[in-house]
Figure: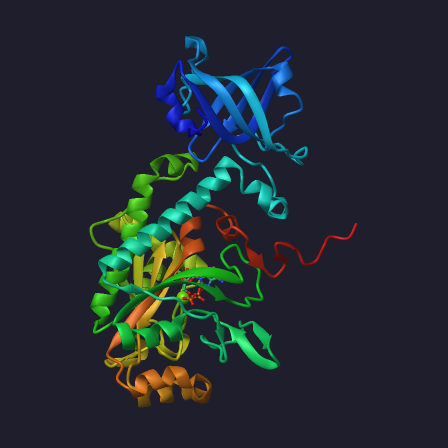
Length: 442
Ligand code: ATP
Ligand code: MG
C-alpha cells in the first residue's frame, strides 16, 4: 500500500490504513498526545498523534501521513465538516516540506487582516480556506461562461494584449517600449474579437484588459479579466437576449453549485426573475428621479449612486438582481458603437448591472466601412493606426455586436466582497505590482 487517499475519501475507510498528503492547518498539543488538522484539495481531517511524532511540526508544514481511519467518540463528533465523524490515528508522519513560523494566525475561520497586509502576504493568504473559496467561485464562473458561450455556438479565440494603437481611446492606456517603438497594452480585446467575427461569425475570448485608471476605487483594477462574446448577424434584441442568457446562466449555476460557499460569505441567493428588467438610460434616470428627487437631466451616464438606486428598484419591483440599461448617448461610447438610426444622439449600446454595479458593457457595432472611418475621426481616433481593424470592414463585415463581462467585478458582487482586489489573485493597482510601489517609510 503506497497510494495516496484523498481526505474526503477516508470517510468509508474506517478501520483501514491509508496515506494522506496535505498541509497542516492547526496544531493542538497536549503533551503526550497532539491533534493536527490536515487539509488537502478535497477536505480537512483531524489527525491524532503522539507528542514525539509531532516534534516541531507547525502550521503549513507539508506532510504525508500513514495512519488508521477511526470513528471519533460520539461526543467529539464535529457536525460542521464532512469528515467530522472520523479521525486519522497516525502511525508515521513524513515531513515533505517545512514552513516558517507564520506572521499571523491562519487557523481562524476568517482572516482578519487589513487589505494591504492580505496582499503583502498574498502567496500565504491565498492558502486560507475562505480566500480559496473566492477563487473556486471565480473558476466556476469562468467554466459556466465557457459553457454558455458554447451554447451560443461561439468559438474560443486567443488574441494579443499588445497593440500599436489604443483600443478604447482616452488617456487610460499603458504604453510600452516595444524594441524602440511605442506600443500599448490593450484596454480590451475589442478590435481583435470584431475582426474574428468577420472570419468565424461567433467568437468568445477571456482576456486581460489593461487600464491606466489614475483613480483609486474599490471597483477598478489596472489589470482586469474580461469575458467577451462577439456575434455576427444579430439584432440589438438578440444581443440583449444573449447577454442576459449568459449572465443569468453563470450566476444561477454557480450559486446553485456552491450554495455552501455563498452561505460561508453570508450572501443571499441571487434574485433571478424570469426576464431581466430592461430600461433605456432615459427611463432609468426618470425612475431614479422619481425615487430620490435627484435631477439627472443632462447626465450622460449612470454614476455609482445611480447604479445602486436602479438596482434597488429592480429588486423591489421585479425581484431581480440584474437590470439591463440600453441606449447610452453616442458621445459617451467608443467609436465602434452603432448610433440608433431613430435618434443618432443615442446608441445601440447597453450595460448589465448586478447588485448595484456595472458588470458588463457592449453594443451593436458599426459594420459599414465608411461609417466606421467617419466615427473614428469624429472621436479623434486615427484610422491609419488601425489598418488591421479597418481592413476587416473593407472586406465584408456583417451586422454584428457583442459584450464584455468583468470577471473580478462579477466575483466580487456574487460574494459581496468589499473591494475588487480581494477578487483578483494578484491585483495590480496604482500602488502595487505584487509588492507596494511606494513602501511606507518609517
Ligand atoms: P466603469 O465605467 O465601471 O469604469 P467601463 O465602462 O470603463 O467600466 P468597460 O470598458 O465597459 O468598462 O469594460 C467591460 C467590463 O469590464 C465592465 O463592465 C467591468 O465589469 C469590467 N471592467 C472594466 N474596467 C475595469 C477595471 N478597471 N477593473 C475591473 N473591472 C473592469
Ligand atoms: Mg462600461
